[in-house]
Image 1: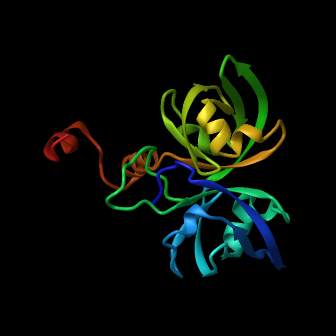
Image 2 (image 1 turned 90 degrees about the vertical axis):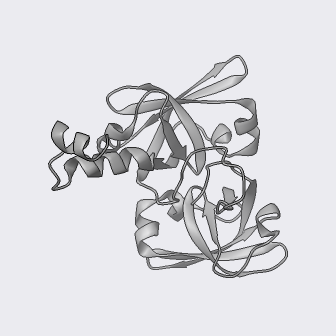
Length: 209
């Protein structure tokens, strides 16, 4: 589990490509402070497992399912990536609940400078739009953000100066792809409503809602 608050930007130092799979080596600093083999680190919003590490590098594997459903397949040597360690139970919770399980890929369609903020319109697959709401949460490349506008096929988010400098989204341009993770509370709510349980007013009242 992650918070969507990026800890640092890492750099790809090696990519071993396999059929629909990758082994990636990433240079980092902060996320290696207390790392152990088997730890989870979010890389551009994708939860990956540390297979080995040194004082300056760590290695992760990207399996076919992740290769096919995220933007990690687009990474190259010297690509920069957002990094976040799994949330510590005793730590502050500054973003929203982020699982690191990407739901789809979005495309940046427009960018607008607004005083000290940058707004970006991001086109999503229509299957993801049902989870989007104004003032709701979304994770984009692992960054916890608030949705400020929703239309039929896209959302608009706004980046404060801190997010512009501390994550990669501020640097991405029109046409670039980003990993999208919808708010898990919205997904759980949908699952409850579409389950075999009859969600009638009587059922809700009986169960304390």
